[in-house]
Image (cartoon, rainbow, N blue to C red; front, side, top):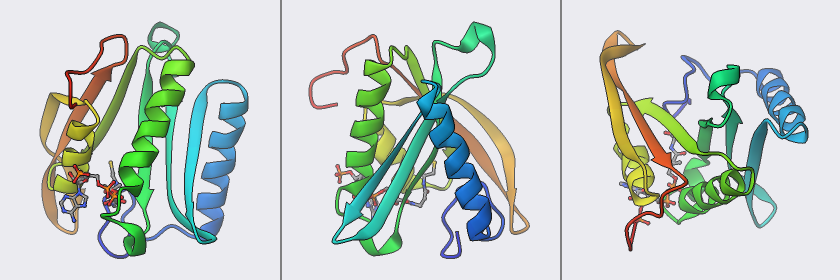
Length: 153
Ligand SMILES: CC(C)(COP(=O)(O)OP(=O)(O)OC[C@H]1O[C@@H](n2cnc3c(N)ncnc32)[C@H](O)[C@@H]1OP(=O)(O)O)[C@@H](O)C(=O)NCCC(=O)NCCS
């Protein structure tokens, strides 16, 4: 976040906030409501990602990727792709039907990663994200896990 990662925070969150968030997601994962994955390189935490089922009973077959982040030192080396592969595989195993994710409109890296992982845009809210005095689109992607992606996707 300090280096400009668009993760929904205005400032880097205090460690205690991140710990509480991850503990909550891990507890939800125990109940089959969520999935939390991490990547480690040489003892370093290189990245994390998670999805969570939608809470509304009528949306429960579907889940949303809430966080996906790779440490700047390990970006551009396939860690994000590997985390996405694990999140998708776990979602298929859990019977999730549609996986969604949203991101800030200027986050081209995230867009390319999600496209390469079989996601496509289903909606866009112009100027929905306010950060540092500027406005950005909120871009919404989804992938229907019941449908095989095209070859190479
Ligand atoms: C987005 C993010 C998770 C990607 O993780 P990563 O480990 O760097 O990505 P990977 O090395 O696995 O690359 C996956 C794809 O991302 C794209 N990508 C990676 N590095 C890139 C770069 N420097 N420039 C442009 N695209 C890049 C490529 O399309 C790549 O696909 P390829 O393997 O076909 O080339 C990472 O950059 C990140 O943590 N960013 C900050 C937090 C964030 O924006 N999270 C997403 C919020 S929704």
